[in-house]
Length: 108
Image (cartoon, rainbow, N blue to C red):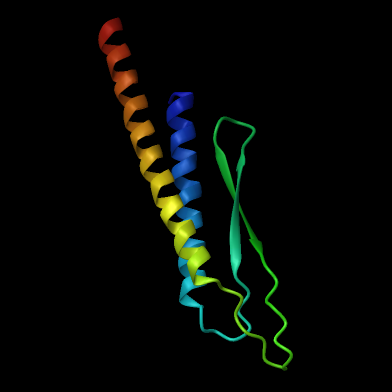
């Protein structure tokens, strides 16, 4: 597998993690005391992308029961960006695959 294909596949996995975390955050939007999570994307040692999940602190509500700290607008905007990133990496994987096939055809 080429470096370009491996990078695209690792980014697809990272985008999947980010979409799952956002979906979980949105599903718990009205859950009192829910602490949202966020995904940090980072370059890995091998060519590619890694996803780290980290928690956030809910806002202080002044009462015993804390509110959820999920911001729906932030989550939805993040999902749009992640979806476009996913689509771009699908295209990158296709191009890398086609390039490898063309190279094999030339060599053969």
